[in-house]
Image (cartoon, rainbow, N blue to C red; front, side, top):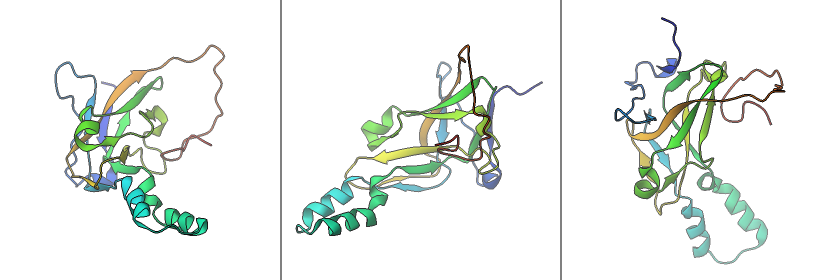
Length: 179
């Protein structure tokens, strides 16, 4: 039987006890993904609160301070240890769990993630799927290995009549399809 779509554990995580994504109920559209390792998602408010507590300083000092602490101003990638295979006219849509914003103050900065069919087994990272989070809570949030962090939904897509492609070959993760 030919494989149509599904999940596999990437090579680097084969011995880490990674669970393949599953649907939580018979009628669930999404497959629940778990974190492959403990990950700290820093609070974006840390920089703001630290700046408020400081005295006013010259502009250059503030810019240097922000550059030094930019880790709090960017998203955090949470590894899943999973890759997905699918048909060439399909993609895997990554979505946040509905409970993440209300319970953990975690959001996906890009709204949804898109995993294209050619991401599978790419030469840079074997197609490893990550969820990207920003944490707007007051203190850092710790995601533990095995915590359900998001869901993936296999979706078909349509092509335009005059479809054109660049001919580029995917070689990696976020932003690897160009520009």
